[in-house]
Every structure is written in structure tokens, then in C-alpha cells.
Length: 271
Image (cartoon, rainbow, N blue to C red; front, side, top):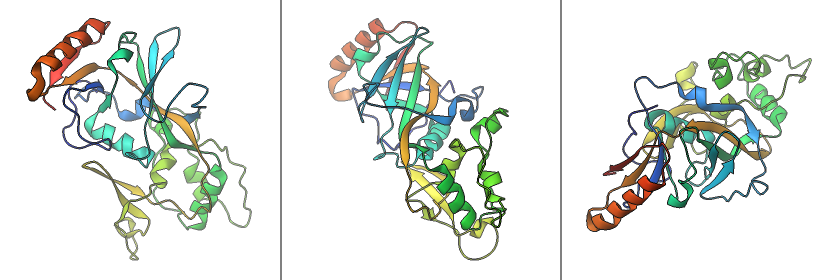
């Protein structure tokens, strides 16, 4: 993820003239996005970390200063909204210039979503099973796609449980891949005919101008979500958006940003 960001609308809207953005670019020799996902998502206490439901919070560690970024459910109701947008467009997050001074090439953007972890995972597995989704295609968990054998893909085994035994003694960490089975506000594309293309739970998720395939949430009486870290991305550049109506101000801002940075490149872009 190194050379460009996709244009167009994002879940957070269009980029603002004269604003500063932290970016992770896409590129032909970049790594798969799964390499940057945290699976299982790590539950956090936002208050203890000083996080606010808007904006970024610096996190000082021995190796570097990182930025915690709260991905709001208003723009990204589903965790996979953000992931699928990033897969196609890269990362672009507005940042205050005052947060740039301590960043280095070792800094990471740590992303938090209020629905990244499901505390009552067992209820979710049971609902998937009750919905008759055995044999139903499951999304490979990001850990499995990276070759990590220590994190179980709990969705597939849960779908194969014998209802007579009702043996729910599976390992129960929440798998980030299950978020593709927990999409709300998706447009139903399935029907009643057999086959994946007509499965009634198949939906098209949308965020900005990005569309992706996923599955609707099963009938869980109550979902107990927890805010959690779900991704950690390198920062490839800082971008300032030009404003033709106030070029002098933007040029000064760009110069100030360049003075603040320590090893990270800065660029002026039109949008």
C-alpha cells in the first residue's frame, strides 16, 4: 500500500480544501490488507486511553508515538465498511497538524471501532447455526489468510455443530472475519431460490462510493459490542489539500507541516 489513494467519496465524505490528512497509500507491490488487521480485535477502554469519539489520540510507546483513531459508526456503521473502503482506496484520515511533530516512519495508525468486538460471541454462533447456514460460505478469518494457525476460524466449526449435542465448547475469541456476517443496512441481493447468488442473507454493503458483498446479521436477540482495535497501518505520507481560493494560506500550512515532520514525506494534492 504505497503509491496512490482512490478518489471519490468515503464514509467520512470528501476531503476538505486546506485540511491535512494522514495516509496509507495503495501500490502494486503492497501487502494484502489482511496483514494489517488485528484478529482477534483487542478490546480497549477508550476513557483510560483518553480517547474521544472523534479525532485522534497520541499513544506513546518505547518504539514510537502512534495515533489511536476512533472510526465513527456514523460514517462507518459496520467495521467492514472501513476495511473494504481501505482495500480499494487506501487510508485517508484527517489529522490536526499539532499531532504530527512526534510521528516517525515507525509510527502506526491504530484504528478503533465501537463494534469491532462482540462480547456475547456464543449467541452469535448459535444464531448462525439456527439460521441454517451450515454449508454456507464463510469468510476466511484474516489470521488464517496470513497463515496464523493459532487463531481458530470459529465460524466454520460453529456452523457444523450437531444441534442434538449443542456442544458450544469451542474457543470463543471474536474473529474479525465474522464481521462480514454482521452487516447492517445492506441491500438484500438474494432471494428464495437455492444457490449462493440467491441466498436471502446475501447483501451488498455500501460506504461512500464503494460497494462490497457480505452477509446480514443473523437473528441475535441482543448484540453486546465493545470498542476494540481492529487494524494497525503504517503511515506512508502526510497530504495537504489545495484550496484555489486561499493558496497563500495553504502554502504556509504545507511549509509548517514539512517543518514538523521527522522522516515522513509531505505532499500537496488537489483532492
